[in-house]
Image (cartoon, rainbow, N blue to C red):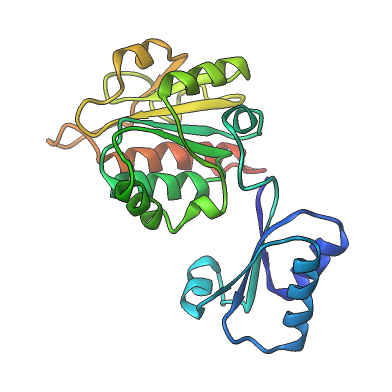
Amino acid sequence: MRRRLHGEGELRAALAAGEEVRLVLVRQGCGAPAVAAAVAAAREAGAPVRESSPAVLRRFSPGAPEDVLALVGPPVRADLAGLMARPGAVWLLAGVAYPGNAGFAIRTAEVSGAAGIVLDGPLVGAGRRAALRASMRADRLFPVLWRDADAVLAAARAAGRRVVVLEDAGGAAPWDADLRGEILVVVGGERDGVAPGVLAAADERVCVPMAGFIPSYNVQAAVAALAAELLRRRLPHPPR
């Protein structure tokens, strides 16, 4: 599982324990000897190091910003079969067309601890780059793949994953749904939703309840609702 390290002390401890450090962010111009020594040790261990602005470190720090942050856990890159073999939910955006929606969904999946995310849709070139910018470049933190939905479903089945489709046409609410085990979560496009062939492959359909006049949530909001429920269930002592 991915874990964020705060400060040079936690980075040193992780290196001493032999943990795989996948990324180090260090504040531009930081001259503190202890930080420099920890970063040098990380480089020697093969970890990529990026100098980052104070603003970037503030965004990635849950509390007071540190001069150095790091990521430990499985490799950031993975092929489709390797991604499906990892613990945690895998998300599939099948048909999401707007870069902002795709980017915020990618970010939400990473924040909620997903194993990775796969996108199948019309985004290419500049659209993909815009989506990754909107995601706060979450592709530097976990696998973000661009593959055909049929290939993703086949890989999920081969890995023994259940398929959970997030769709507004019926199904259990997130807090009532069967989300046990390793799952592939499928989200459809903004206009047409989930394709009939993909919907037919679902082991579980999930619908976020609605009470207003507008007939559907923005895809970002629906993804966030289910991602939060998945994370709640993974916590050691889920809140009631």
